[in-house]
Length: 101
Image (cartoon, rainbow, N blue to C red):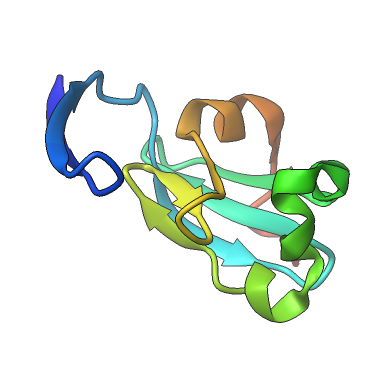
């Protein structure tokens, strides 16, 4: 378990630590994310299918999409859009670290 501050609630909460976490993220112009996980693996996550859903539509703007950051082991763009690390890990594909990305 870990204790984190929940800004929306204005209080500290306890939650289970993720099994994996994102240690590095890079947003690409084709709306994919290149992710490095705490396992050392590098994977590619395709965001395009998610951009048609209302909560994510604003990320179709390239300037907003590029503003991805890591928070609590997952990725986030703003206060309302985030993806948990386990989902990213499960739904991404492995990338050959020697091949150009």
